Length: 381
Ligand SMILES: [Zn+2]
Image (cartoon, rainbow, N blue to C red; front, side):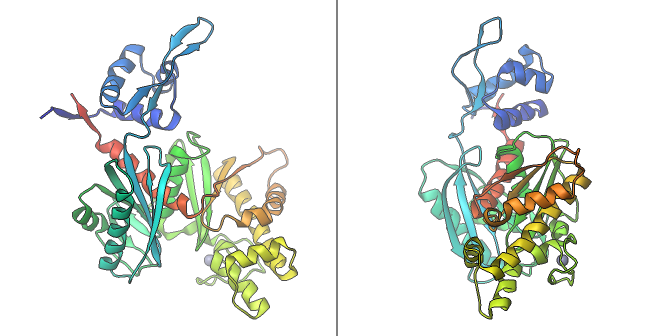
């Protein structure tokens, strides 16, 4: 048996940098990590030997014209599965080492008890594994609620759960390492490591869907607290004339932007049930009641983004979640409101729309599994 050692902290930092920024030149890596060329060669050798890293094609670098082989991760060398669990179903993707989705699937939940959820997730993972020849190195599960130590769901209102050791249960069932995380924290992690804004030291994330989520990256780290799973960003006051949320806030972000609130508002006005797609279709075709509902949502979203940019002092916001198609209808209005609520001399806020919908949530779950795998990484001594 080959001798195994844990990778040092600097080794893991190196892997993280190459994962996020690769292909990246050795000179740039040395600058970012404060490492000499000799240390870099020593630290990267086990990753190259083990097939985690590859040397990209030679490029000629700088004025000296010396050839350089940038480092990159072998993105196809590992597989991960990410699963988002909601009150209705488990939705999952199988991904490569950069959380790129290679396949997806969904299983309905037969109930909200732990056995039903474990069965749905296990069946989903088995299905995703079958369609792919490469061994799965880890499973990430994301859930709307609070999670302790990425293992125990301490509170999940959608499922009525308190203190469920979900990672232990799933590891026994599946025989692979399992990481559990709050869904917005997981999605924010995926944007930080693998999204369009990857590598930026500070940005915010707003998700629109069954609820409204808020995530923050500051000083290169995803900000989390014991209250992260409560969804506090979902109750920002945005419109004094808006409808009520379930907590009794008038015009908070959930009341203005969550899918159930938007469909109910138009449903009440029309006197019949409507689904989200129909609301967006009617709004795009200029239906006055639908336009009234979505315009109020657009102004609220602009106000929310301005508040985030002003208070958290970020100039980049990623918009994501399964309800993000709203942006097509109200993006311009939201941007105009955002500008009104900013100082005219303030840096313009860059809005990045991640329109992958449910796949974004599942990729988030995969991203935390990839992070965890990096922490467990063992390489030959
Ligand atoms: Zn509220």
